[in-house]
Length: 623
Picture 1 (cartoon, helix red, strand yellow):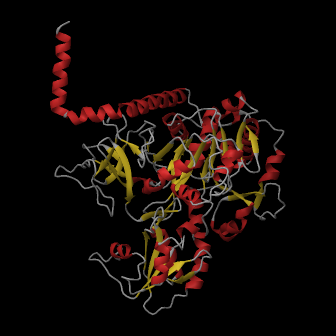
Picture 2 (picture 1 turned 135 degrees about the vertical axis):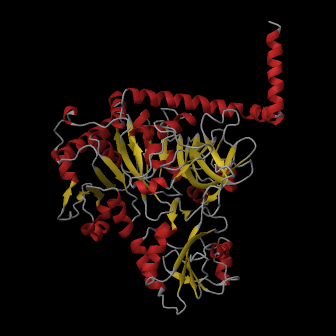
Picture 3 (picture 1 turned 90 degrees about the horizontal axis):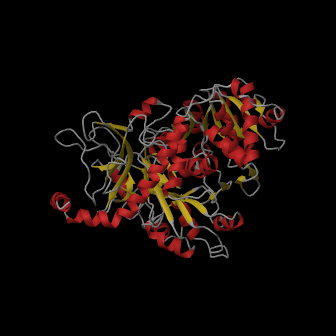
């Protein structure tokens, strides 16, 4: 017995010498954070393993919740209050209708619809058939919209009446069969389209029979969610049934959500944040989710009060907009115990939670298609998550040294990647382990795009990792902080914008002139605003016509906020347009001799003078 204490003492001395006393200090101050996260991770894996063993798909899980409490509210909004029974019945009618139209497992159907209860019912119903739903960004127009439908190989498209005009412009360029959702409004349906409301009404008294369907498996594809990247047009990221469960359940356990919570999300349901993280709480856990057709800063907390919400979702831009509104009676009348989301700027973090009396913030970080997803579970201001210093191998994520412009890993003499030390910025990666839902990388519908997000021979020969494309840094305790994006994308209005996609459209509208698009920072504004530098020494560009045409082909967040008319080009040694210097100069007329324009609230472009520059930087002109 006397030897046991001596053995532990010797072990402690060895660890002290090997790890240093600072390791013990860090372990002591972070152990609660790490053990809380570890327990949540264990519960998550237990749930996922159970669903995997029983081969449950999303439809199976939702059906159990709907039958358990049919009269409980599932989805509510300004105009709708749908119970679980209503949502289940609607999804069943969708399954019957599209089964009768010949759709089966593996087919892809696009969904272009505004936030409403039917949105969820449509993809739920299609999922029971094994049909993959492509959730299309409602801001897309023209070429981007056409590409999103075609790249996913959609054999059909369900679109809301509000998008009829956009579909009219591209209908002849897409092979998909069209279904128009009119929601009871007698708007003419395109001759080649099917009236979805009438179709669903015709099958209301029919029963859905499981035996006649080749049901999807746990690991089968459920949906495509589009994400922009460095390759140009939107990419369709694969979300399987297991992946959907992992994302929704992961944030549920990590942030200690409760089944009795009522969630508020004004985010679009075609994105992972609103459509998986929030709606997933209803699908998987039987909670109530309040949605909104379109985000309103002034109505945010008024909605939370109206719907009696206890958990609310945000993205960084939202928080800033909400904080900029005038004080109202709803600022502190709500019952919100937690807000969760991504992009809450450290500079406004404390002001936001103090004004609106928010007990806890659950800041998370992650990519729709990625496996490097993290959450700040202990309210640490500014942190987007953490890497455990006690259990670094449990959730294998890392920050590696990389070129800040290209995101390419910087390798050592042995050809392997190098980890960053605390305080050093690098690219965030997640180890890929096939067959593990927390470590799998499912990629995109376009397989060629998937390979570009994978790094091989990372820390040893033969291993693989998902490259996030984002620069992060860590501190001594393992907390992670966002620095910037790498490569040819920038983030504006909560959306990732591909510079190459915008460049293609700008160049086309500017009669194929050389064009460079990049993101520029505006003081006290989240993200980076788009700026286009167009080589037009003879000043032939009509900016009014350009603005009008741009509004027809690009969503508002992707349109350049600034224009620079170049009179000369700076070409690199590899015959590429030099972007770094232009980005550094931004929209500053004090250092730029070229003509500059800025986009007004009306959508037109006006001359950017020194006086205007000062007004922008002082916040008197907003974007």
